[in-house]
Amino acid sequence: MISKKYELLEAGVKVPISLLYKELNRLVDDYYKCPELQIKELILSNLKLLTDALLLMSQEFDSENT
Image (cartoon, rainbow, N blue to C red; front, top):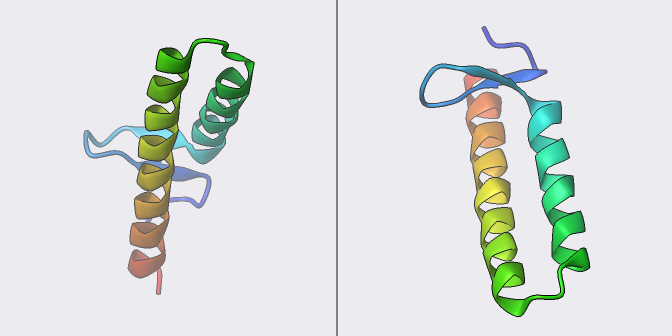
């Protein structure tokens, strides 16, 4: 069973959820501070991917523990 503080990535590596949320917050900060439109678009794409990954991991965790 996996602790709530960790999720398993596809490669089988445990990653603290807090680290993923810190990265998400860092990307949000970078997005608002960035003056370059093309870079902002890349950051936004990364934000969407990370958010989707977190939601999927959360759903999988919930389904495994119910």
